[in-house]
Amino acid sequence: MHCDIADRSLAPRGRKRILWADADMPVLQRVRERFQAERPLEGVRMSCCLHVTAETANLVRALRSGGAEVVVCASNPLSTQDEVAASLVEDHGVPVHARRGEDTATFYRHLEAALAHSPHITMDDGADLVTAILTKHPELHGQIVASLEETTTGVIRLRAMERDGALRFPVIAVNDAATKHLFDNRYGTGQSTVDGIVRATDLLLAGKVVVTVGYGWCGRGFAGRVRGMGARVIVVEVDPIRALEATMDGFQVMSMRDAARQGEVFCTLTGNKHVIRREHFELMRDGAMICNSGHFDVEIDIPALRALAMEEHRGVREFVDRFDLSDGRRLYLLGEGRLINLAAAHGHPASVMDMSFATQALAAEHAVRHRGELPVRVVDVPREIEEWVARLKLDSMGVTLEELTPEQKKYQSSWEAGT
Ligand code: ADE
Image (cartoon, rainbow, N blue to C red; front, top):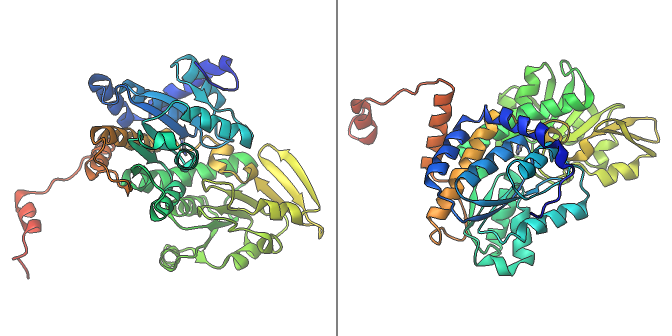
């Protein structure tokens, strides 16, 4: 089996982490059990470019129970949990191409190794596999049944491909399912970003001025959670409706220039490029800490920070680099500007990945069952899948849903009754 991981001897530790996560993934467990019985993915080759975490390992277990032949590569150079990669290889016989801290050349070599599997279905966290297939692998275009996308950033990229007429096969926007972004982006990113910042710095958040750049689902989640810990939260947003929402949610909303002067901790969650740049570094307070929780490491203009700094001190503490400016101010960059929740912490908790990954697994099944029928576009996850996942999650939490009475059903489906 061809694979490239850091250290196979870490497998026992990885096995424990995978089982620990599994215990908090009841919906995915149900999918795995049904897949085992029905084998809906029999013979389907899947290449998955995902963060190699304990939760991802449980997704891979479910897909393989369904009969899929899965190869995994890292979707980020810093997010791989080497012990999980080891367990996937040693205990489950899954070819994995991922090493924590891999350089860019290795990252792309791993991506190519996953594509050498000649997939029918790809699963992406940032659209890197699809981009590589469209730009470098025309031989695969005809055989791809569908590609599934996990992130907001990836969906934005894929919609741009669709607009440009570049797509060659259907894409299912798993990110856009309510059972994904409403929970994973809001509660998962919200909590794990706080976790990443705290692990990297040991800061007390109470009383700190924390600037949340972006008020999408991830930004909303982070702002809400960090406020819950007592931080004084500022939101920076370009969309007027979201800015209004943040204002009515009780946050101070202002321009990046104004926020730059006041913030003590900055976190970008926009999916866009250079949202914190030279003009902002120039205004920041001594000791400001800057991090990113968006998918790519482009949100903070790190080259500009480097150019501005007189000296750069790498690793003043694990996950922290210090940049000394000529006027004596020191700015701290956390997690090299890569997503802090996976670089410095363990990513989203299993309980939330449970829904995201159950939705992924069921979307893969849907793609196979409708092979050749899906349009060559970015399409949504079917509503039945979302409802099934939500119902099961509620059930696992011991929450009972109310049901409509026949009278209420009739009332809702008729238009005659008025005042
Ligand atoms: N993305 C964010 N958190 C994650 C996790 N725990 N596993 C896989 N992908 C993730």
